[in-house]
Length: 317
Image (cartoon, rainbow, N blue to C red; front, side, top):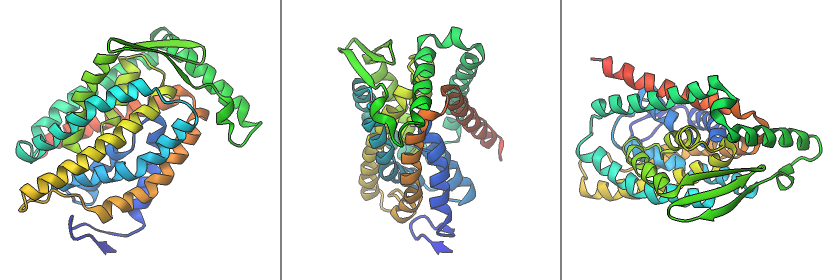
């Protein structure tokens, strides 16, 4: 057993890397770092409930997500204009969220209820679309099926077929609209709307130390109607950048509030990230072989399970 002085956590040294590996491998396929699940694990299983747990979660994101991002970049599946807008909204949102966490939500029970309702709406919308099938997904599902079929075909011909598979081609990028092509289909969204939604997600991510990927990914799939194979890398990239800002913000706040546990527990965060680095890369590499509907069902389950967990916590005395 190892004791971490900052958090007071006592845990076997092999457990955090194992949890980080398993969680990040599964979630990185949907553009989620896994911090969304690590936070309740730290709070409920390890008993780490101080505000610094959010900052420690950001440390995991900063260290673990680059390996997954690099894999998506190498495969040409990054929508760079979308990534820019998500970061432009998410970074200031993360700073605002950290301030809210420290000054007004030291016990964020009531806010959890609000977040739970938002997650229920998002998760319910995703499940509805999945049940309806092609009529709801439109040409996004057409592109996803075509890409997954190509990935499966190339799997038998090469050990790393990423160079032979279609990537993202941006056709238009203005402050009003962004349009890109993927697998023979064109996708368009409001550039400013993406930034505005990312700002709100950044606030929530800054409060809970989750980077925001677990919120922005289902929003991009469900409300912006973008294929999951093109948004996963963007969601991970935004999580990484927003988390860098989050770590910096928590360190700055720790200097202003020396009596509180605000700064991250770096050794604990790095231990989780040790497994997360491998999990992110492997998840990003394997994603193209997994049918998009399975990824979306898994993401829906994450969102709804987290919402249910928050609602149950509200009922505890």
